[in-house]
View (cartoon, rainbow, N blue to C red):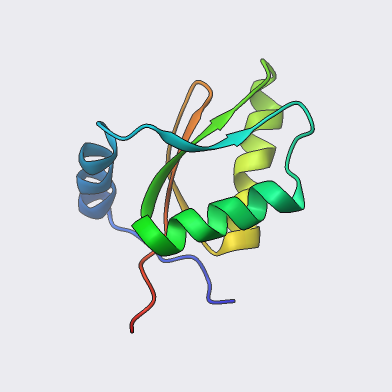
Length: 95
């Protein structure tokens, strides 16, 4: 797996603006980060590059741990974490 891309502040700002209107396409439920969630995240990152992930639960530290684990598993970069929403980015693979 390729390492997560390193983004400049300008890149992050642009990605946040692009993500603003998006709806969450992946939901992390009560069972936490499962293989199915990782596979769904992979599919959506491949298709869209920039996605939102909804994480259930009120424990902020747990949501941050899930974000880090999901980024490690998919090679994505965490662009933003607001409340229960994560914004992940991974450039589309070149054809």
